[in-house]
Length: 156
Image (cartoon, rainbow, N blue to C red; front, side):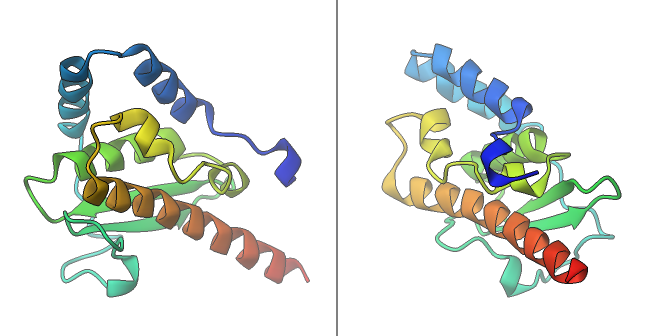
């Protein structure tokens, strides 16, 4: 798939479309809390504590980590760890990115805008949370870019 045909994966676009319809601040917060309840720990066959520093999301107040697992069909599956049990925003972000990007081609992941979390969380997002959530998006984009580079290097 070329960059010109890459697009935001439909599952993630569906989430963006949902949040575009939520104008009430409390409803947005409640929806994000419900989404965060779907958070699942990174499987032990992917990573165990202490997690490697290279998987740590920079600027994330909730001490989040991200892994990308190449799949046989060429897609990626993302796994997340959020060490702060009170890190509801980070957990919601992890669930949204996992559900929205798992199974997507790396070429579609790298085009996801870094500021997508601002569209989901809304204007009330604090600078600290915005930095961490944006860094989480940048981590999945970076993992996808490395997978694209790995594949192109393998074919040369």
